[in-house]
Structures are given as structure tokens and as C-alpha cells.
Length: 114
Image (cartoon, rainbow, N blue to C red):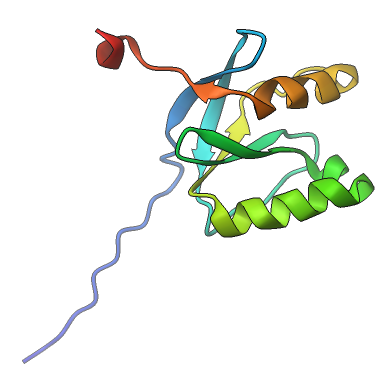
């Protein structure tokens, strides 16, 4: 009897989703594997558990803000999903974007809402 191992490998099949911030602004995001999560400079990320945002930020926040680092580590332990914002916005608006996304909720698609 021969036993073979079967693996499914996903190459770039990230799912697109939309999140609506406190202000009502919609943000496009791409899901990332939380187990293989790696951040790139200049990108804004969101870690969530269900529809609750646990952490929003970038590498800049992790380097410069000890509180953000603590929240990030907790979010990695508790979170279910990670998202990379498609358009992180201007650098001078990053803090207001982070604030907006900290209260964000997933946007229901037209199919689900109907």
C-alpha cells in the first residue's frame, strides 16, 4: 500500500472585501493569510476577528508606538483574518485613516443584503 500526501497550495488567490469606516467611507482590502502574515513598508493593514477590528496600522506604528505593538501582538493571537488595504491613502492622512478603520465593519455585498 502506498500513501501519498496531498497539499493544496494557493498562489495569490486573495479574497477582496470592503470595510466601511466610522466616517462612512468604504475601504477596499485584500485578505492575507494570518499564519503567513508579513507586512511591507508603506502598506496599511487590518487584523480582525469576525466583524470586529482588533488592530489597524503599518510598520511605522509598530516601530514608533509601544501601545500599537502591544495591540498588534494581541491581535495576532486573537485574530482570525488579516487584510491589506488596496489604497492606503496619503501618508499625511494615515492616522485619520487608522482611526476611521478602528471602528470599521465589513460591508455587505449586494447579494447578501438583498
